[in-house]
Length: 185
Image (tube, rainbow, N blue to C red; front, side):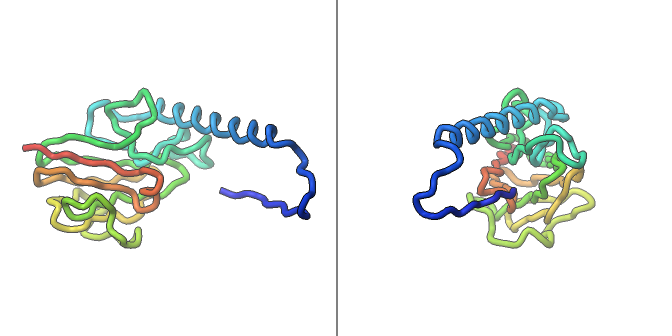
């Protein structure tokens, strides 16, 4: 993200009127929303499965990115619209996989101890209580953080206790990149 700021003398006229600037902003906003919807239509995982995308862009891990990135955990159950959350309901012992499907954004998979609805205040790296080369077991008793995972990589977590577990990305939780895994017997 970058921009140019031009500072003029007080009372100086702008190059264009306010309507022009509003039109440009609205045009860019609708372009970005359309790109996000196209991104989700490229969702590569089986609907109703246990794989979530950590963000997604139409380039599907190609550089440079072809379009904008959706900063959400995309729920496999609703691939026809831009996901509002990455909520899943699973059985105890299920392994959930998060795959970074972006070509331009790092992500984390981070869970606080059970019952906390906020992410812990920790740095994104290094990983905490996390096995980056296999499956990490999570029972809600400890903070778990994958550390940064880049485009084309995946992290896996096995839920070993029942309950509702809040998770998110330390880089993008302020953008709503979070969700809840509900684990049933």
